[in-house]
Structures are given as structure tokens and as C-alpha cells.
Image (tube, one colour):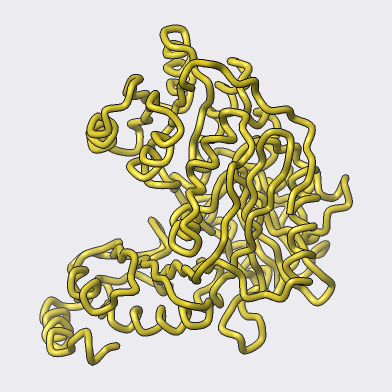
Length: 457
């Protein structure tokens, strides 16, 4: 599944390439990214943006690998560009890599200013703005939902008349399904818009535009247990678009909070081919040329329609590829940043599934959950399990949409989905209302303590 683009690959040199990783928030874990990039070259530098957290654990991971290069910190996105330019003056860079949606802008700016392979800042700006994507798709005839832009409360009534209700309200610049709401009435639309404008999150960037889009019934694909949308996982490199795989999504039962992804797809060949063609047209329309692309596609009775294009790997995709196919997607993304075509394509030997357990609407406190080590011992198919909150912590969708994530491998996608249901029950996450008395919380803790992982499984 390969299509041509216009960008040529970079010329090879006799010197080991010098790669720069921009890290700081989201995307593929820096330690795993460093493992992958170090397979391409011994010279890997890091610019870590410290605004979102302590850089020292990442510095330790980098130092432990004995890599040539430098470890630098920057206060913000502009500082990352400044640090990268100064690094290039000391030790010329060959490629710039990031795996995070929030760090795409400095990556693109550095690549352009240094003449390195990369997406243009303009293409990245379009990919990060859902409103600009929608306009580009309309210009190029790429199938996508009907939409109206909302820049203030005065636009809501007209948008509702144009699109009709129920509809989906979402921020133009956002990630992780943050502030995406299904609205059925004018009153719900106004409330959702006000709530979305008031929400502060690292995954909501600074653009005062919301979209009201026609509702596509994505929640379930009949009674299959899967959602009615998928994603196309692509790699753009050396003048070509390589569409590596189609991934499935678990059914949505908590609004538009994502619930999980699985590789490879269980969809038939014709449906996958149509999704890939739709994604290819969308990528070309935006003008992306380099690196990973994660394109979400709605599977509608009228055919595939683009939900959104992301100019980076879907968050869990590098690990899903590793588990299902032994494929180092992160390293292939590094090759693309060097202007090199992929040297392998994934060959799937089993299914991998990431389960994301949503937080129910409301304000809660975690009363109890099964210890991670017990879960890993009870379920050997688990790759990892990562609770987001410990007992006693208050949780709501204001900060994140999920209680926990875990990944497992299985012979087929359906068996992986069945295994995920067993593991989720075994998580033993018990919630009480945030204002519940301490006695009520203790009663739940004692009840859960009497339930074993084996019984839950």
C-alpha cells in the first residue's frame, strides 16, 4: 500500500547521522524512543521541554545508553527551536524527530530552517487544526463530515440550523477527545460550548474555534463489539506514502472518550482498501510528506469519511506494532526524519490491543483497585497495565478521560477483545462519589479486598 509524494529523500553521508529527539509531553515514551533511535545511529541528542514535568528521568535514560550528542532542556516550544538551532551549530543535525502531537511545531520549524526532511510548518498547522482540515478536504473533494465553525456564542444558533441536531461539538485544536461532546438540543449545545471554552488542558491548544459537525454514528459497528471507525497507520518517507496497517477501535460506551485500539484489523480487505484510499487522499490534500500519520476514518453506510488526520503516530501505535508484528515503528519514523525509505514492513503474527478504561461522567474517588503486580502475575498475556490514579485519589474528566490503560497480546482481535474484558473486571477499580464519607469508602475497600484476581477473571 504505497503512494508517491513529491518530496525526495536526503542524500546519504559517510558520517553517522545525528538525530535530535524533541520530548516533553505525550506520544511514545522517551526511553523506548531512545532505544529505537539508537539502532539507527550512536549520535542522538535530546531537547526536552520542561514546562510539563521534570526532565531528569529522561536525562538519566539518555545518559544510561551512552549516546553521543547532548541532552538539552527548553522552557517552551520556542525555546526548543532555539536550542535545536544552537545544537546544530555545534554538531550538525541530520534529522529531527518527535512522537508527540504537542511538539510537532518545533520539529517542523527546525526541519525547515535547517533544510532537513520534514513536514512544512504550514502542513503541520493544517493537520493540527480541525477547522482548517475541513476546509482543505472540502476544496479537494475528500469525504468528511459537514461542519460549521463556532467562534462565539452568537454563532451557535446558525451552526445548529446549518448542521442540525443532534451533532458533535469539538475544539478545532485538541487531542485525546478532550471536550468533544454529543449535543441534542440548543441548551446542551450552549452548555457544552461554555464548558469547552472554560476547560484548561495541555491537550487543548490556543485557537478560539470550535466545530459543530454532523453526527456520524461511530459508537458501535452493529453487535460486533467494535466501533464503526478505524485508523490508517501510515509512514511518509523518501517521496512515498506507505500505508502500513489499519487498526480497529473498541465500541464507545462513554460518549466520545476513546476505549481502545487493536492491530491488525478484523475488517475485510475491501473495507480496509477503501479506508486506505480515503486516508491517502486526505494526507495528500493537507500536504504532509514526512513521518508517521494517523488518520481516523468513519465507516458509514455511504462509505469511508475522514474524521481527522494526525501528523504523528497514534499514541500507542509503536508498542502495538511491536507486540503484534515485532515491528519497530519508532525506528522507521526516525529513518523518515533522515530522508530514508522504510527498510521493512510489518508482518503480523498475532493481535495486540490497547484498552483505555474511561472515567464515568461525574466526580469520583478511587476506593480500591487490584495491585499491578497481581494483575501481571494473573494474566501472562498482559504487556503492561497502568492505573492513572491510586486509591483515595479524586478523579473526573476535567484532567484526563481514563482511569487506566493496559495492553495485551492474543491470537486474534476478537480473542484480544474478550481477554480485555476479563482483565478489566480484574482491575478491581471501585469508585465512590467524591463527597462520600470515609466510612463508605472503607466499606468498599474491605469488600474489594475479599475478591481475588482469579475470581474476577
